[in-house]
Image (cartoon, rainbow, N blue to C red; front, side, top):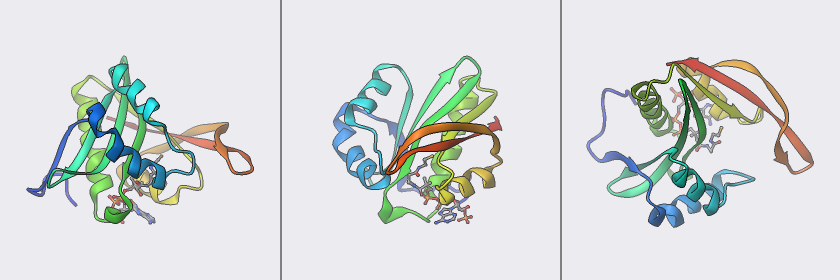
Length: 154
Ligand SMILES: CC(C)(COP(=O)(O)OP(=O)(O)OC[C@H]1O[C@@H](n2cnc3c(N)ncnc32)[C@H](O)[C@@H]1OP(=O)(O)O)[C@@H](O)C(=O)NCCC(=O)NCCS
């Protein structure tokens, strides 16, 4: 899906706390160690940029962006399993990069599990490069898993 060709029924808006039930339904199936509703609430209260992607007013995806001076840090991005592989993750990431630019971001960073091939493929296709590894960053079934730190110029 091309960012210039926004489908009429897809829209973005800020996450409200009343959205958290719908967001959590996606979060718990998408991540082995999901965020809690409290984590989302903390992000909202901290002033992070918290966005839902809707199709016909139904929440299909969401993303959380933290700005620190001229750095944009993508803390979460997720698309409902029923709608994966349709270009919506790319569209949502494009949207968050645009917001990062508008807020004065020069670079965007994120952490990703090395086992998360679909996410890494998406990030690389957009131009993210590996910047380093954070050892034992994530909980994993058998201990901890490293994070790959990726970044792109905005
Ligand atoms: C990562 C995620 C957001 C991608 O969303 P999506 O809507 O499925 O992705 P898109 O349809 O926009 O695909 C964009 C690109 O991602 C890559 N991709 C998506 N699914 C893939 C898969 N199963 N295998 C390999 N690459 C894949 C491709 O490069 C694809 O581009 P292409 O269609 O031109 O080949 C989604 O898979 C998701 O929510 N995963 C669970 C949550 C998660 O892991 N978030 C990232 C945490 S770091």
